[in-house]
Amino acid sequence: MSRSERRNDQPLPCHVAVIMDGNGRWAEARQLPRIAGHRSGAKRAEELIRFAGGELNLPYLTLFALSAENWRRPKSEVDFLIQLLDQFIAAKLEEFVASNVKFLVIGDISVFPASLQRTIEYAIASTAGNSGLVLSVALNYGGRQEIIRACCKVNAEITAGTIDPERLDMTTFRSYLYAPHIPDPELIIRTGGEQRVSNFLLWQLAYTELYFTETMWPDFTAKEFLQAISDFQTRQRRFGVTEEKT
Ligand code: IPE
Ligand code: IPE
Ligand code: MG
Image (cartoon, rainbow, N blue to C red; front, side):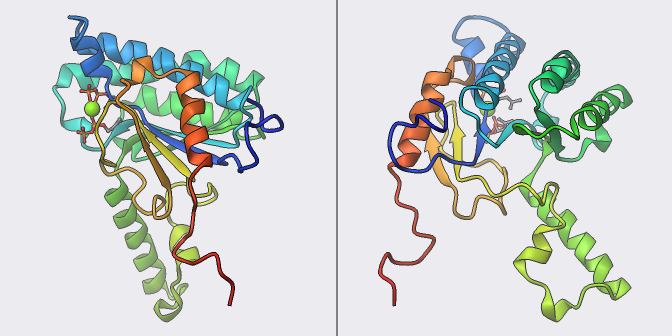
């Protein structure tokens, strides 16, 4: 389904965010180590990025790949994830450049090994001029941490006299978030059967439509991605107001 041949008249979302959950359980169900699930999950992410940026022509895709809380998992799993992320970004960079994908990261990458930080920074710089899909990957990301970080930055501006606290509004506040120029997601998909947001995009999700599926992330196909979008197209978004005009 391209944007021009959509299934019904309802608008397609501009920004879809995905909580890619269920890798570990997918692997355990197959008597495989959890890391095998992460490996299959990375393959799935690769396909979905290609589909979103290509056929679907989606402007913004945000993927939750590693939460700030995931950092507390056993060292062996965290080390594997760090290595997988490094390989993934390095291996995909050529394709991102060729397919006009703009790569971004949200989250605190300062805790990562220097090699992963370099890979991330190189990928961001190499795709900065691209104008196709904006792909944000959330790494060591926490929504509460993002809000506190923004508060600290706002506080510093207030102390410096560059922000008048009486005039602080939502537009100014959001400019201190990780990626202020990315619009809020219209749709968030969580795979893996849990119905929670797990500290993802807390500010940005205020009016986002939620879609939960039992499908484990390594089994989440482009077809199901389209199903989620079709479901989104049936939602009536009201933003707190009524249809009736005064
Ligand atoms: C999601 O899968 C990937 C990360 C959080 C890194 P999980 O690893 O959480 O898989 P489950 O939820 O244990 O099945
Ligand atoms: C959310 O999944 C984070 C990612 C998918 C990266 P978790 O597996 O960490 O979430 P909880 O622990 O089930 O809430
Ligand atoms: Mg999980």
